[in-house]
Every structure is written in C-alpha cells, then in structure tokens.
Image (cartoon, rainbow, N blue to C red; front, top):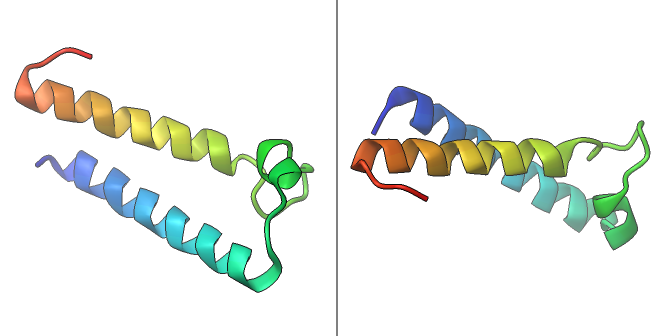
Amino acid sequence: MSEDKQEKIKKLLEMQKKFIALDREQGVEASEYFAPDDDSEIAGFREEYRDLAMDIVDLAHNEKGSKK
C-alpha cells in the first residue's frame, strides 16, 4: 500500500472519530450536516471526506490495475 494511500486513510479515520465525538457531545442535525453554516465545526467536512474517499478508491484501482 502506498504511503499516500495510508496517509489518506489515516486522515479519513481521524475525521470519522472527530465527527462521532462531535455528534455524541452535541448532536449533529441533518440540516447542519448537509448545509452547515460557514462557521460550523463541520463546514466543508462532507466535501473533504468525499474527496479523500474518492482519492483512496482511485489509488486502490491504480494499485490493482483495475478501472472504476
């Protein structure tokens, strides 16, 4: 597994832990998750998480020589 892929997986897991902790502490409404205010703790979270996940998928396909 490439170092880049490992770092992205590590970041993804850190984001998951942070989100779960935030949800347990104060709850996260669906409206906040899908359309957070600019000053929200999770502003940009969904997009960053999606981009990281897709990068990991792309890296995995490249490693195996497969296509999406």
